Structure formats: structure tokens, C-alpha cells
Amino acid sequence: MSLTTAFISELIKAANEADRLSPFEIKQLLNRSVAIIRDMREQTGIRGSSRAKDVVIDLQVAGARADTLTEDEIRDNLLDAADIIRTLKIILDGKP
Image 1 (cartoon, rainbow, N blue to C red):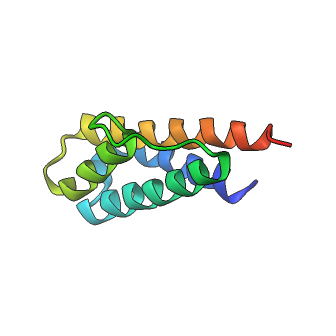
Image 2: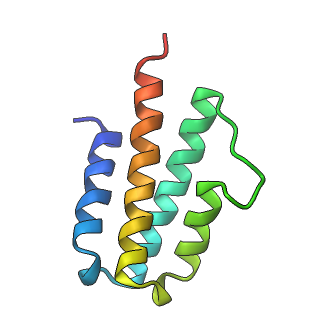
């Protein structure tokens, strides 16, 4: 299993255990997600948006307010991060 696949699994597992995560753990997972997404976007040549609807911006905001997120917001943000990373991995795996 690749490191990326392992991290996607970690995000999904964390999303399913959102009620057991500390704000520190949430922030750490979201910050790692942001770094990975940025790196993978750079590798694929996909540029992020400077608009307010860029998922990276949403994840950064969620990480910054990790101590005030509801369980649903935690779960949604972790699953969004996993989905974006999975999509970027598929793109990278198909790239010659």
C-alpha cells in the first residue's frame, strides 16, 4: 500500500471516529491533507483556485477552528480531503 493510499485510509477511519478525535488530531490531519493536496496539484499541473471555494482554503479554515467544529463538520472535511487526494492520486497514476 502506498503512503498516499494509507493516508486516505487514515482520513476515512478518522472520519468514522470523528467523535473520538481531539482538536489537535483534527488540525493535524487537515494540515497534512492541505500539504499533500498542494504537492499533488503541483505534480499534476492542476492549479488551485484563489477563489473562496477552493477546497484547500476550506480545509485550512476548518483546521484553524478545529476546536469548534461539530462531528458532522469534522467528518465532512476529512471525507472531502480523502476524496480530493484519491482523485489526484488517480490522475497521477494515469499520468505517463
